[in-house]
Amino acid sequence: MDASQITELLNAELTDCQVAVDGGDGKYLVSVVGDVFEGLNAVKRQQAIYKILNEHITSGAIHAVTMNLMTVNESQAS
Image (cartoon, rainbow, N blue to C red):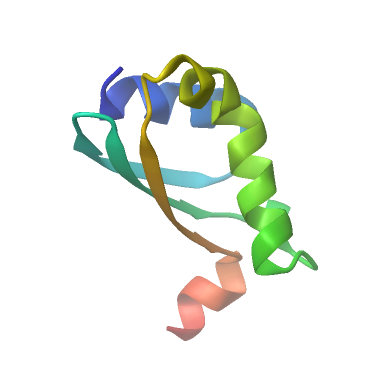
C-alpha cells in the first residue's frame, strides 16, 4: 500500500475534505482538513480515520500513522 492508495481510500470516505498523505514503507503522515471534524476532540477525529484504515492496519500494510486533523476554521487560523 502506498500513499496514493491511502489518499484514494480517505477521499472516498471523506468527501468535502482536503486529504494529503505522505510517507511509505508502512509509515504515513495523514493530513485532513474538513468540517467533518467540527465538534470532535482529537481522539474522536483519529478514530474516524482509523475506522477507514483499520483493515489495512490489521493486515500489516500500514504500520504507523501520524495524523494532522483539522477543521477548515482551524486550518485558516494556523
